[in-house]
Length: 553
Image 1 (spheres, rainbow, N blue to C red):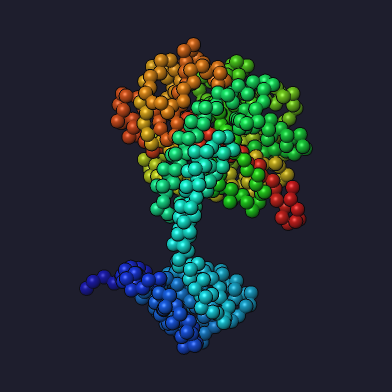
Image 2 (image 1 turned 135 degrees about the horizontal axis):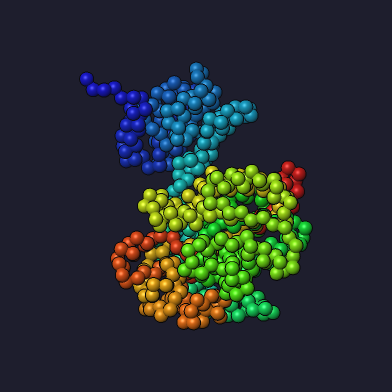
């Protein structure tokens, strides 16, 4: 005697078999319509059948439940008031059988408690009798065909914008031009990934085109920007740079009488910010701009420049005990708190401040416990290292690489972390405070796919996106080379030291063990070089919403 299958197993099997058959039988889907006056709905049924739907009808809840046990439907139209078991009871029974099956409640009643019960039972839509065929068609499109419609409209929109973006890339002349291009590319990347579009490959090619153009722009302009960082020299045509964040965004807010909470997310890209911003939009008014990370786009340089208000060679010259060389064993960001202090003192300010770095949940919990004490400070700085740790873990761990195997998956993990970690609780506290909240980063990262051979001595640094050392040998015209580091405000350990930066999605590999090296690091997220993803990074001001009072700060 064969073993008896459980109810759930029988249902799953029946659903699978039926689904395969039903895909051939009907064009748009199969509906179950439950109504005790179903004979009066014949005209509606004919209308839907002409639109390509198969419509199965029953006149009571018991029959509807039995049918749902036997087969799956794309959507159920359910009358709320029927003899025997009610529509709400039928709804609960159907949801216990097939939780994901969309159910649309159709009723004459507009009582609030009935609506609340239906919504609480996770109905997909709510229609008030008498309904017309177009109303029904609209709810079918929303609940059955939403993905296909969204994908179609999104792909059509991107196709129309594709040529305009390509022309704009060729015409880019200024920083603002590149910011506009990057915003548009990120917008389409998010929309196409949400729509599960097959056009992502086309977008990836266009992003590559943009990154190549941006690299040419940086090669042509970066050294001139460095000249304008000299005291007394100003150039409005260049972007805001890492050492200018405090004097541009933080200090003016304090001078205006506000307390500032600066949240620095290490290795945080603009596309990741776009995903997180929707989580904050209900609590804050968002003022977003994009600034430029200095080179190299690495913590040792960009974040130390941000906190000190100085370029790296100035830090080394003025505060040699706070600068950590490339070949040193200690961490490259161990002196961030004293660097902040030096900047405050250099501007002859008397701001009180706190600094805290969060690497794990335990340190996050300790920080939240002391949150109430922070209100005594003019400036509170907190650094979250999760995203940077994720990018490194993705390189080292096969399992993490599988979890974040695409750009979309990488963003999804970032969003999940934000929702379920202490940072979400911190922003909830900040939303009830009087702080001016500033969210930023030191640099972003790029998915590195193309190896570039380089040769250096044993003292050459290990970063995959930039190299500094003596007698570096390379054969690639797309690299950005700085042979006089002092002109770029970079330290020069030796007289003959030069810096070489990878562009686009390339990464450096040594000829020794080349194949192993390439296979290990290909498609990993790296930073240090030149790309839109690494250099064009968010600087966001959040103003607290006082919605209950009907006013905004």
